[in-house]
Image (tube, rainbow, N blue to C red; front, side, top):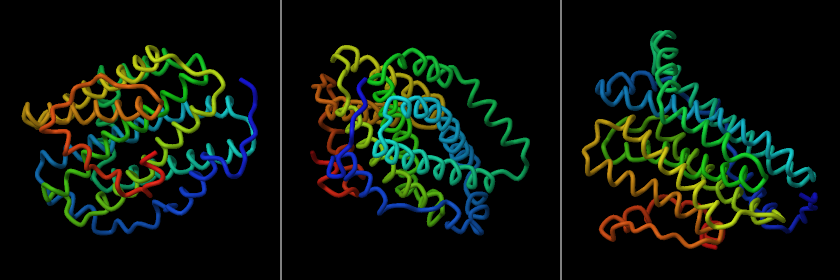
Length: 284
């Protein structure tokens, strides 16, 4: 791929400068009361929260794998400034999740056992296989990055967002930081889409759809393992939401999608927190 110069008035640079307005630091959030809030929850809720945090941290490894390869694809200074900003944001997410998880375990052995359980899951292993199978070109790597943030990451943190409706971890730092991370993820997905549009060589529709749908299927399988406490109807709705996340990436890349999500549920997922971003960033 030919190296490109990125004008300072480009879409990517505008998104980069917009993202800087939302910068936050994990170490600025006071966690002094977090353990007390956590241990007041039921055993089932504590297990779910620990699993979601551990998954978020584990997914971080996928991000590092793909993004350090993407750096090699885009070598101009403006591109690198944007990419490094993304890396710093994700490092901040990693630190936040790590700090929370530290509060949610009384003994280190329990945390180590949890990560062992997560990484041994078949669906988690399939994520690595999926990534390794779709990393032969810059276009594949950028689409994978969009999926890591817009399918895997988005699904993870939207589940925590639903805690608010169930009065789980009310007024906690978990919910506070989750809102910040969701906003960052929305920016990251938009960045990946605009990065993809800057490529000279892109993927055809069939190849693009397969990468995205495989990511959706893997995340749905993982959700069924992690969210086993949900009813079959709730799992079905969550599956529709994950599918919708994949469909949005496909649509933003310029391809139609043929997924049929029931109208009775579409109104719910289309009212999710995309509204928190400036309209000119999410409604293009």
